[in-house]
Length: 286
Image (cartoon, rainbow, N blue to C red; front, side, top):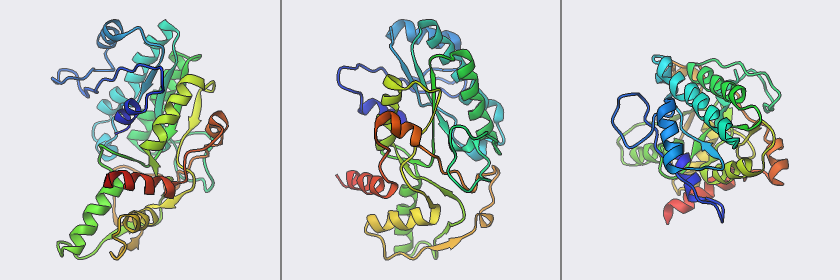
């Protein structure tokens, strides 16, 4: 979802090479095992030389990571080590995409890059390990960009699921629709995030940035907005606490990110989340 959008917004004058991720060694696919030094070396040799790398691949199945933290660590941490080490050899920048899940959600104001991480899930732990190890391997060239609540074309995401469930409700295939109202973040469109990653690659100097659409909301508020902008605002949604939907993984109750550092770099922030959502849903209609 994110990687494809990065390739679709390549800046003028830049040529980009993309590759798919192979999540486990020995699994046949057209992708690359990014945690394997040999495969990454071959990629650099056959497709390079490169002037920079944007690393968007990740193990994002948050609940599954609780049962297979080893695989999540390989994808989220070891791949960062391998890529950072290879980029360091060529003295080129690496942008690695991070997550709000590195925080515990106890704060009640937006998290800055200076706040101490405290992940409460296997996913969060492996992502934090990845960003720290990448900086250790390539301290001068690594830029970690933490983001959250992603959605966009060519992927499974919350707005799409809400549209599907709302239509089921209208068709009589389900009796009710309840959405969590006590977890808060910033819905972030890949249409907004992808260009920002290019800006960080070309102009970023800090090792850590936060990148999310402006403003914040609960999942319930996001659902209401999605259905309203989709013309499905006649569907009734009931708010509920997260405790009604127990998960294997602990999820931060509040993970809004302060993105002022990125806004200073770009001289603008990402679009407000409602505006970005309208733009995305409008693009779907086309």
